[in-house]
Image (cartoon, rainbow, N blue to C red):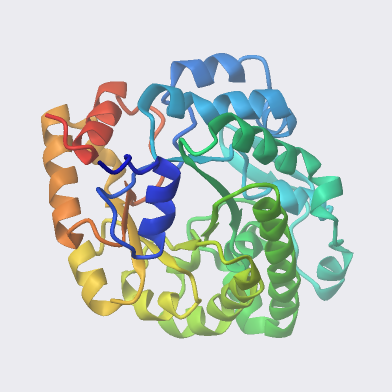
Length: 343
C-alpha cells in the first residue's frame, strides 16, 4: 500500500503538471476579514503593524489552515511592503492603500532606493521560516509579491484607481520615466521573491492585478517584459512561479510567455478555454468569489464543475480573485470539502 501524498507534494506536483490524487486547493486572501479570529487580532494591531509582527503574522497565516486545512499556506503580508522599504510612504486604511507622494518624474524614480530583503524586510523572511517549521510537509508554503506594472500603478496613482489615468498619461507622455520605474521594480521583485524562496517558500505568486486594465499592445510593452525579467531571475531556484492577472482572458497567451509555471485564471475565462489556449501551463482558479455567498450545495456543485473542466491535472483550485470580507464560513468549508470529494 502506498502512503498518502502530502499536501505539500500535491501542490508542487500540480504546479509542475504531474499526476496527483486530486487537485490541491487554497484561496487568495484566505487569511483575512471573513474570519472572526483574524478580526480579533486586527483589533489590537494596525495593518502594517500586523505585517511586521512575526508572531501575529504567523498566527493569522495559520488561521485558515487550522480551520479548513488547505493544501497551501500563504504568507500574510501585502504587496506594498517592499515598496515601503524602497522609501515610498504608504498607509493603508479602510479605504485602501494611499501614497501621499506619487511617482510622476524621473527624479521621483531615482529617489526610490534599493534594499536588502533580509535586512529591511527581515520580518517577512522570519515569518516564512516560522511557517515552514510549523507546517512541515502538511502544506505548501507560498510567498508573493506584486508585479512591476501593478506596483507602478499604485506608486504613480497614489493608491487605487478607477481609470488609471495618471499612469496611462505617464505611459504616453513620458514612457522613458515609466520604463525606468518598471526596470527598478522588476529587479526589486526578483530579489524580494528570491529571499522568500531561500527562507523556505515552496512557490511564489506574482500579482499583476492591474495589468488587465491595459490593452494587449500596452500589456506586451509595459507589463509583460518586466514580469518576464523578474520571473527569469528566479529560474535558478527550480521552484514554481504563479502569475495572476485579473482580467487575463484577452492576454492569456502573452501572460503565458512570462515563463510562469502556473497561470491564475479569473472567472471571466473558463478553465477549459484556458487549457486549449495555453496547454503547456498549469492553471489556477477560477471560482467567482461572489459564488461563496450562495448556499453550500451550490458552492460544491460549481467547484465540481470547475475541476471537471481540467480533469484535475495541472490544476490548482482557487478563486478567480481574493475572498471577500463577509463570505460565510460554511461556504468556505463547502468549497474545500468539494475539492476533497466529500458530500
